[in-house]
Image (cartoon, rainbow, N blue to C red; front, top):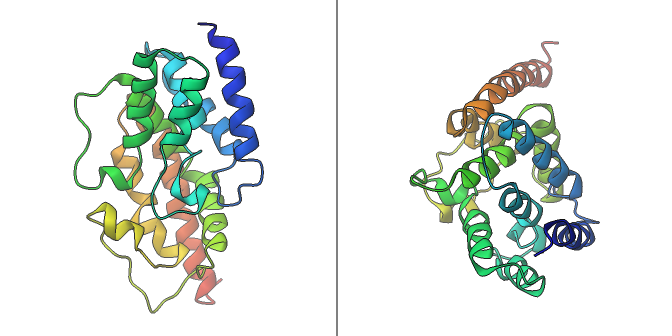
Length: 217
């Protein structure tokens, strides 16, 4: 198995699928998550082939990208099979892809899973917070015709994958429903440290946002 060749084929495949993606899950999101994973892995030992494959492919079958009610993990699985990736590696990658999302972990945190899972999950979550996270939130909200803010609404408490999918809210409230929760959901020491600064940046942004919204600035 020539890992570099496989990674190159997967990269080309993913870039093609995400070329015109407009919800914040585009190719540049993938590159940033790969960079985050490298930061996390500086002090950790992990199978970087599995990590890279999972990051590259984690959004190709995402329901938000394919505009379906549910995710389609077969897109990633079938492509890996065509590349003749060993079955055990495919299963490791697919476990990460199928279980890493925020909505899949609302009821409980995954325990006893490979370190590669935690690295990919943290790297992806880091891209959802901070300055980039703010930009992505409003990009996604715009793609779904969500209001920037609606003062008549209240942030909702999300408890199941089902009610997360049905959530109708403003982008401002999305910070309180999800993004501000991510700091405390990081798994690795490196990600927790990075998340502190990005979380603080979002808090300051939201304070300024309300002051301007209410005409106090």
